[in-house]
Image (cartoon, rainbow, N blue to C red; front, side, top):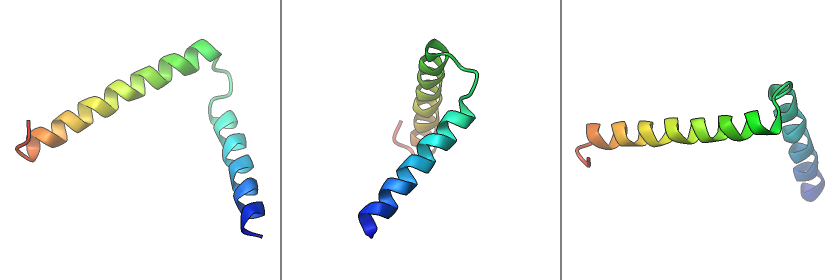
Length: 54
């Protein structure tokens, strides 16, 4: 039962991701991932500076 639930959740997650990214080409999706990674790195740097680690 647990494995089936995980499979269903995974399928629904994939479906939702596709709906969210609808209209974006593969290149657009790759660029988005790169941009989000840069934002994440910037946020981590700011957090570290605030916490006195930077």
